[in-house]
Structures are given as C-alpha cells and as structure tokens.
Length: 307
Image (tube, rainbow, N blue to C red; front, side, top):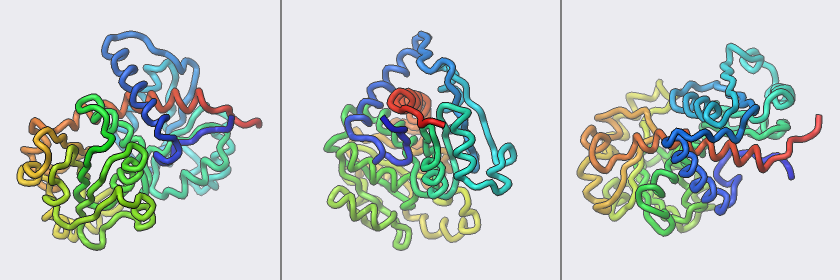
C-alpha cells in the first residue's frame, strides 16, 4: 500500500466516505459513554497552522488525545516554513518525525506540494479551495438526524468559496443534488461545476435554491484574507441572507448548517441559527468525531515510505 492523503473528498471512494460516517458515529457513542477508544496510542499528529482556527485546533488536538495519541501545534512562528523554507523540505523532514500531518493554510498548492514529498498521510484542514474535513462532519450530522443523504437536495446560499466547492465534491461522492445560490461573479470554480455535471444547479435567487431542500447551508460572506473586500461583499451578498423566509421554502423537515463562526444578521438571521432547524452545535461537535475516524482510517490504510 502507498501513503493515503486527504486533500479533497475525491481522495476517498464513496464507500470509504460512508465507512467514515459509520465509524464517526461509533466513536461519538464511545466518547459519550466514557469508554476508552485509544486506537492511536503512541501516534503523533503535527498540526501546521498558517491560518488560525478555534474548531480545527481543538477538534484535532482533543481527537488525538481521545485516541491515545499526541497532537503537536505548529504556527508559522514555530517552524522554518514561516521563514521561507521550501514546503518540500519541510515535508521531507517532518514526515520522518511524526505519523500524520494536518495543514490549515491559504493556498491549496501548499498542501499538494507538501503531500507530494511527505512519507506520512497529510490532511487538508482548510485551504482557499477546499474544506473537506468540515464536509465529513456535515455528512455525519445529516446522517445521524435524517438518515442517508443519497437522493436528497441541498441548498448552498452565499459565496462560491472553499466550503461551497467541497459541497460540490460531496454532491458527487454522497449522491445528492446541490443548488447553489450566489451573486454573479462569485460562482464556484467552473471546472469543478462542469465535472459534477447535472448534480449542480446555479441560481441567483436564494428562495429558488431552498425550494424543497432537505438541507440549507451557508458561510460567512467575507473569509479570512478578504477583509479589504468586506464592505463590497456586504452590499453584494445582502440579498443572500438565510432567514425565515428562505427556510420556509425548504422542506418542513429541513436542517440548517453553518461551519462557524457565524455573523448573526449577516449571512444568517438569529432566528434561523438559534432556531429549531439549526443543527450547528451538533455539526461543530462532529468535527471531533468525524476527524477521529479519518485519522484512524489514514493511519491504518497507509504504509509510510522508507527513509
């Protein structure tokens, strides 16, 4: 076997992704019952953060602790990456010292170059193109509360950003229809949309996207690194708020998700995110359990290369 990486949802098969849902649910039950599940005792995860995050750091660090392993936090101030060392050289060195590596950064090319030279599995914990770990949590959450998402309809409302693009991959891998409501000029990557074919529909009206949907999802209008565009984005995206009028168009049993942090009164109204259809807290917790399943999978499926 070769080293398995998780840079996008397309790196795993549909069966493997569904296996992760089942295992994530099992691990969650074990943790809630207080039963030890130290399947990764003695394993070390290096967490490289060029882009900060609350949920990503806590979920991976707590997850490794619950699995009996250890997580090492590395910021740009702590590594030679922050001082200009080539990504390839850092990959060669770190992957000889730890068992698995997680990277949260801006440029997707960084994780691709790092994984190409790593002897151990690499996890994309967010780039400007994709956020696959969040999708593992979202899919587990929907499965727990509504069953298999296969054949359902999901509405993405807002920017065609990294989360939206991971939802495009999810539509293919988990077999659902995805309607994307976004302003002109803020569409997701055209190549990804074309590859997904008739699973994807892009519209301009949020209510049209939400009509009959079983899941409604949004994200912040201005992502980290786009702060200079905030005023323009606020004006452009103001018609794309997920509010009660939008949710009324969805299926009566529809769920609302948001990867957090959320800005009440901007991309989502307070009555929606704090309302009965919102499952954002279950979704946030499931980052922990879905990623534990992913860590187990990658470490058990991979055979590191020789030094």
